[in-house]
Amino acid sequence: MDPLTATATINTAKKAGKLVTSARAREALAVKIEYLAVGIFFLIPALLISLVLIFFAALGIDDQGKITGFQSGAPTAFAVADIPAQYLPIFLKAQEKYGVSWAVLAAIAKIESGFGRDMGPSSAGAIGFMQFMPATWEQYKQDGDGDGRMDPYNPYDAIFAAANMLKADGFATDPRGAIFAYNHANWYVDMVMSQAAAYASTMLPVGQGAWPLPAQYKTVTDGYGMRWHPILKKYSFHDGIDLSAPEGTPVFAVKDGKVTWDRENGAYGLTVMLDHGGLETKYCHLSMVAVRKGEQVKAGQVIGYVGNTGLSTGPHLHFSVYINGRPANPEEWLKIPSGNN
Image 1 (cartoon, rainbow, N blue to C red):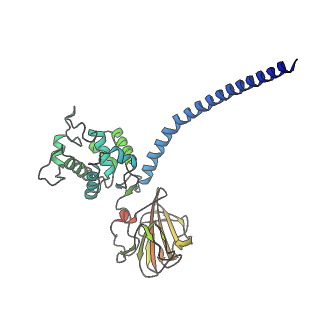
Image 2: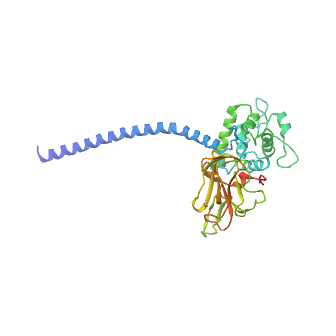
Image 3: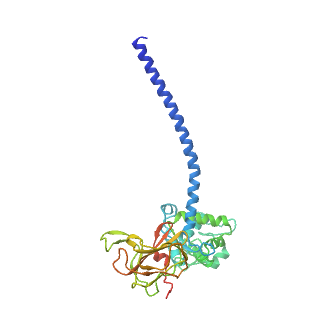
């Protein structure tokens, strides 16, 4: 074979090799894409289910396993994008007045009228922004905007009336039951709760926590959020509240739970942690603990005593609330001292 023919043969073989490799690569890529598509097909429902499960775990559960009342935390990005801006403040004001989750109210408005895009009358005769039956409206109607009129087509009046109805139907003790009373179908309750979970960053159980100290010690000396650290001399996140009290003051469990920590915990000093099922409370800077890891405790039980351990400038209780591993403002959760003495 002459040199030119040999060179041409080699080049042809190289090109053929590239074509084979390319074909194999394309085939492998196609298989990977197929697997990826199948994975996404199964992953999205799994993520949605996980979101719902996290939502339910974040709620308070009573001794019978029933979900108890809750308020909703800050709106998610999805909520801001999905809820018309002029209505979001109304939902938040209704939560403040009636103690009913703003996200649940928003979910009902979305499902019932599409935030006012279809205010009926429906085939069943329901009317207005929150789709009340006329007789039900007469029972729960409210003048939300203070204009002297009560109009089911007025978003303020309708949202406040819905909150009033849910409160009257026992939202504080059984949210699902209250929503069921609004529209008698379990699928409807599931839809509302799922939509509410997408709207709110957290769900805070309402009024379930007993005050962790004797009632006379209720002054919050350092609040939840970013603050100037008095010892480290820098801004840092404060994951709870500080309550000043003399050393040796008894510290109470705010809710029934299980002890998961009973010893030193770095800067927090001597600490007790309680697991309440989807919710954890922490009691820090103690002088002494009165419980042991694994022990079941009752709300109001003494679990330790105020101290000055860890990074602390004086005797006080640092109290934190975590919902599914995320800190929440204890003042929103505890609300009012229980009157422990």
